[in-house]
Image (cartoon, rainbow, N blue to C red; front, side, top):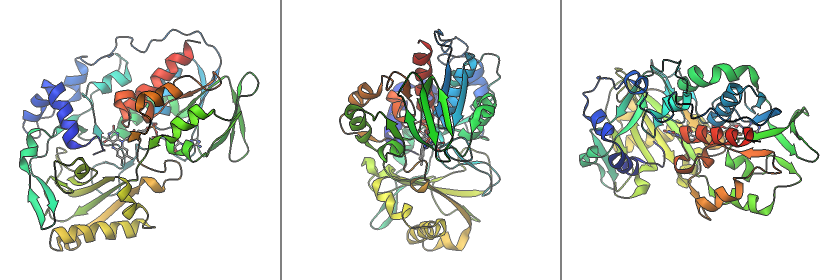
Length: 415
Ligand SMILES: Cc1cc2nc3c(=O)[nH]c(=O)nc-3n(C[C@H](O)[C@H](O)[C@H](O)COP(=O)(O)OP(=O)(O)OC[C@H]3O[C@@H](n4cnc5c(N)ncnc54)[C@H](O)[C@@H]3O)c2cc1C
């Protein structure tokens, strides 16, 4: 579920939202439909013109990266009539938002899965009163919670009182982007274009990709993962100053992996924490029932592991080896039942993705304010930074990544 783990997340919810308790108290299957939440326009910015920015700019923009932030940047630039192109290294959009349709009869989120905010944030992100945002959102409220101890598995159901989050019921984060954000952006995306160089000498910006193509624009919105910048995969001319590179290097991005396994029987709790539940680290690695709230009859258990220790799985070398390690882990906990009931698995090793290279920003050595202060102003007044790490209090989330892109577009358009 993200390092923004169950326990801390729930504390946040408990503090913030009477609606969360309302949602949690709804019987299973009584859909907390986004139609009711989103359609009534209670969310901040829904149709209020929050993103109707002043435009004092009439040039061309290059957006680098087509994850949630890059798509959002394109969506908002298009809405304001700005000419733009999105350069994406891989052959698909979404980045750390990715969907699998092969494992089960329902779509699975291989990356971002939970809506770590009030669900009305979805309407706010779309910000179009003309759209019927009838997405279905359900509370994720596990009842059967256990944790792993030296001696096996022990119940910890008291946690059900403060574990509430939200998920899509029939769609996914990818489905959300695909339906509401990507349609107008897709024609502007050039896939298979890993950016290798950004040159800000002269008046505009020249951006080179690894096949030697050069693109020119007046401004750039850079949304690649921080890890890509830490690895200096993109060369800046003139180089980024030390203040910016120090800030980039100050971010801790742990390894990240998710593995979904389908079984022909259920032998596991709703959630299995890894160790003492009162220790934050217990939620860096956890197993959870991926069907919870989705109204399906299949048995799909997921592993979420975002931590340096996840290297024990991410560095195994192949997805088959990772799946074997997961089954061995579960067999040890459940007396061999994982292997006996296993049908198929899908592993998503985010650390091994050449254009992602890890999970998400999880700590900032010099403090978050210093990070933002160093990178808030556009480099050479033309290269704007956006993406999950720039999401402020919502960093390391999808909606935070999108909001950071909207903020970058607003600043860019201000001229
Ligand atoms: C395991 C895991 C679980 C998560 N769970 C949740 C969750 O439940 N809820 C939630 O809200 N968030 C979750 N997140 C976080 C969320 O996925 C991210 O915060 C968000 O998707 C990041 O969006 P982004 O656009 O900033 O970056 P990305 O999605 O990483 O997009 C960056 C894009 O840049 C491209 N790129 C990289 N290098 C180059 C280059 N040189 N040239 C061109 N393109 C390049 C990449 O291919 C990618 O498409 C999770 C993340 C992980 C890894």
